[in-house]
Image 1 (cartoon, one colour):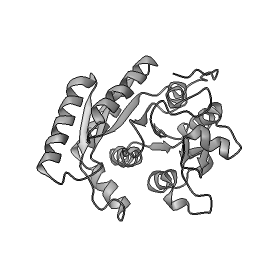
Image 2 (spheres, one colour; image 1 turned 180 degrees about the horizontal axis):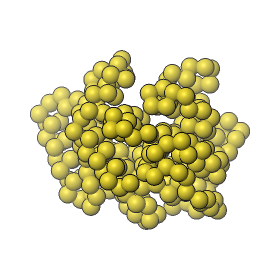
Image 3 (tube, helix red, strand yellow; image 1 turned 120 degrees about the horizontal axis):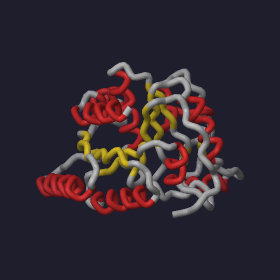
Image 4 (cartoon, helix red, strand yellow; image 1 turned 45 degrees about the horizontal axis):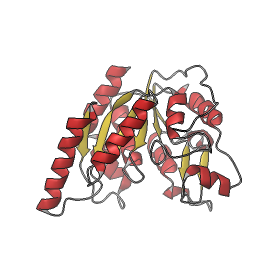
Length: 255
């Protein structure tokens, strides 16, 4: 794991929070963050949201395709975008490389300052990661180090497809090596089970992840076929799912 010289500063005012990290890219981190935010808000929690780093986003004003923009519009429409998403790069590559191509450098202390400003206005904070936990943010710092710096427990978002057992266990191993508290694993269906064989694979994957993780395992969240066309409606459906209610209970009890 890469090392860093950045040092944590005092905690912010938010009393609860989670860092949502993926086992890989495109596992549904934004979907999970948005649905959890809505679910928390329905129970009366004043929830804030942040996506510190995003890559593969256009710089031509088409912010509607940005995950960070979607989170802001859905959960905290009046939040300062520069605080909610301090680093956004057009290149669809690892953050450290995207920053280099943009002739800049990701500063973890700047992310921490933005987080503390946002957290000062909310009871609970949800922070969405970028890629997996060992994705490099700089030459010497990775996502795992950012989680450590923010002093948040981590909720791992994972697929239910083939390969998820290995990816989930490796992610948990990395978090444990970094001594980061693990809130649990949230499983997400990223595609429909089109055949009986696919259903059997999913059932097997979920069962083995539950058996081997050693942490609470939530879900899976049901696949939403209309997510691309009906983002907000699909998120609201997932927010009411029993899986998300269980995660909300965990978040509130941890506070």
